[in-house]
Amino acid sequence: MEDIKLSKKIITADDYVYDVQGLDLWYGNDQALKDISMKINKNEVTAIIGPSGCGKSTFIKTLNRMIENIPIVRTSGEILYHGKNIFDKSVRVEELRTTVGMVFQKPNPFPKSIYENVVYGPKIHGIKDKNLLLEICETSLKSAALWDEVKDRLHDNAYGLSGGQQQRLCIARCLAVQPDVILMDEPTSALDPIATAKIEELINHLKTEYTIAIVTHSMQQAGRISDKTAFFLMGELIEYDSTEVIFSNPRDKRTEDYITGRFG
Ligand SMILES: Nc1ncnc2c1ncn2[C@@H]1O[C@H](COP(=O)(O)OP(=O)(O)OP(=O)(O)O)[C@@H](O)[C@H]1O
Image: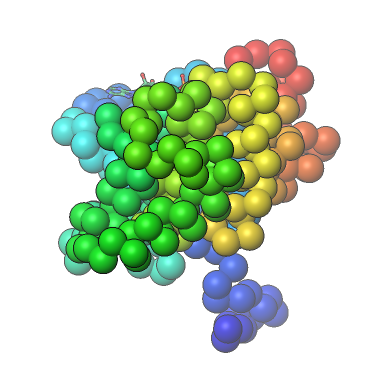
């Protein structure tokens, strides 16, 4: 990897995956994101926290342009992904959404077998070889820490899995197309504490290979799994720092009030 020397600082070209610069977003006339600028580091877990309605989901859905499924949305500013603005005309949204996968609050497997769920993306990308698809299925389920629980029932319907298993299946489905970044929008809010602990352990493991941005309402969860934490309030990014600093020594009073439970 080549280092770039910028004045006195040395920054490594590949340290961050995203560089968000002055991002504004409106739903019709209502501004939901205001001048957001932040970098998201490679192989780290970045937690997005803040009270309900502050723009957390909107922000992460903007990172793979999923937000554009809502017709009234308008944006300005830049989101550089590996140095290229994702809003450029030359960026193909389907490709972006393959490399930047997403896992939602409620597990959303397709009404198909476990196997078909995992190989859905690779098949769409033209992979037909049965052995290769089986291999992708096995590798993805192993990476999502689900293989041992489902290896003897790959052709059973995914709806027969528990909520926690369904969420890990959705993570496996996301991994099957070899993403670079995984966006997670409150991935454990519908799960019990044991299933939540499994997903958290998995996230901790996945960050060695992937970059993860996660929206969470649980401050304990952000504290347990994230390297960096961004605190949003009414569409603004109030503070962004290492999770340790945010939780032990925040600079902004509003961050402190939120993490100590004084509002939100
Ligand atoms: N489809 C939409 N159309 C219009 N306004 C929207 C839409 N989705 C979200 N908003 C508004 O944008 C703002 C930010 O919403 P967003 O869902 O991003 O917040 P959030 O922090 O993720 O909230 P929560 O924690 O409750 O999920 C809110 O004021 C919300 O009402």
